[in-house]
Image (tube, rainbow, N blue to C red; front, side):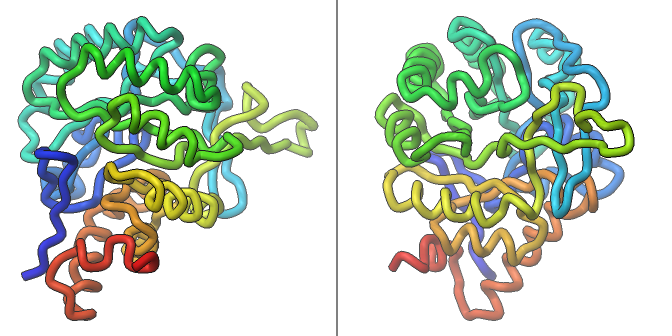
Length: 303
């Protein structure tokens, strides 16, 4: 038997494979493919105070080894989530984490206060790094003072586990990781999408209605891996790696670089069973290498 569990403080996860917000819906969309309770955790799509229609179409575009998205946090708001989504996802036998987004710090605070009242949600992921909304989002994630301020404000009202999702669209991501750690983050997740664009040469106009959007997929993996490695060496809290993780091999690279866990995003659009295949692949790798505990390889390249 191989132990592949990890923890954020006293919050235990059965394995290190989580789903990335915005790529896995609310979990139920994948129930026909596998038992999603087998995953370490599900991070549901971004939730805001009020309903959001998102950006105009087109808002997704395929790129070499990746994809651009500018969905714009489309969701039905926290009230709908509380009444219609929460009763269903609270039945999953895994950690269900809510990704929260706001245009103002007060939005994040209000969301955290409401989610605090939902006992089956053990953690929130504070999204201060979304590159395709006009207000908030990346504005918090790319300004060090704002990142500190929003993390501190949420920490003051939220007693459960707080994960802060970091933007790669900064000069030095380590500074942001250290800042949110100092303000009370229990873990950091990185990276969110890179800011990019594509042009439709037939139509002679941008491929996205917003011109720019978030780049994800295998194309961003080397950048994500480098940033995870840098942050993992600098902070004492767990690091959750995100960015172009398509296979168990990709996930293991992040773990060797210092990630305690990973999130699967774009891969789920290609193969709905990608995340559970990665769980089994990590177990097989550790067993074949003769390791009994995933902690033996976490940050191995830095030992």
